Image 1: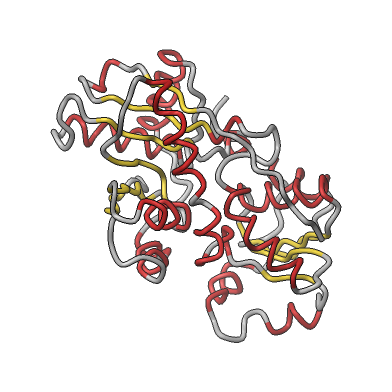
Image 2: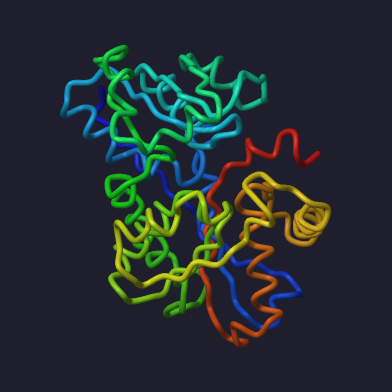
Length: 296
């Protein structure tokens, strides 16, 4: 495998929306780095791919759901760069647009049911899969853990190099959706206390995001609930917000992560958390393939 020296550049763009009320927001457009290997997923994968190469593995085995952006990016990368991929999926077989893509990219799929997927944090979870696929390198859900977080640190430097295009000398904080908390943790590590990182939780507390982040960084961040009742829970208010935002700004969102995160930011601004003149970096974490089936 590898070496993988592809380091895409994400543009930083100002966001103009009436409800910002004087808060300045710049969007780090990870959705624009590549048509298929989109968003924060590649940055989380880079360290895992390096580890797989060092271990002499021929490919990657990892986990995700039927709309997983992580598995979608992993499968696309496997097809492009020529390494084997295996996906362990939550739930029972279903033909979502994402799943059909995974199959088209050549990923071998195994459906674990819901109980089987919940066991993924158990100490013996990987044993049978390593026996079945001894040549593949296991990667945690979402490309997580310290390895995935460290790969996201380059995003801080990408933002700092582009601040002059906005006329900014500095910024006050980051705002992004948190699904596993890995990207957030990577930003916190790279910031080393210089700027606070806000994570809008796209999943409920029982998904363990807080524990994931605490295992990597002790502080420098704040988590806020933005799950709207559960993972992949989509409601009319959220869909209306996404459509209104796209009409007003042209910024495409999806309802599982970026839509929830930006709506949560709107609510926090309306509640007075951020004063006019505050400068925020909003990370568009990609995942627009997940719009299919939710947003027309």
